[in-house]
Image (cartoon, rainbow, N blue to C red; front, side, top):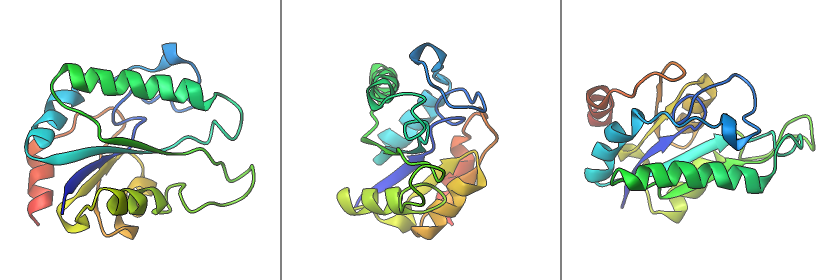
Length: 164
């Protein structure tokens, strides 16, 4: 079985603006996260993004614009010797079409990733900047770690949490 570091996107991998990031030019990658996450990549962890993107349902931006942002993020990781295995995103919003099984705090995206990549939840962790990230992780049997928006990920703290 594989092990994974699941990552929320906004506030963890890119600058949190407390609104939808609708334009590619507003997508600012937190470059300081990459060396830390590369250590996990080098340790054999899959890096998988788990992100709510309700702005798609609200027609604030398109899936093509989102794909461009994700390509930028992936390229930044590859340039530094790491890779993001997959980007899971929920395009739904509760005010447009009701509830879904993928929007965090639901665990649908994590459960899909666990199945697709044969991941052992007990050896994996989810890093997010909102309680819903931790709730989604816990619902999938994955330990959730809460950080402040744009806070640098602490490798030793995450390693310690993984060992418990």
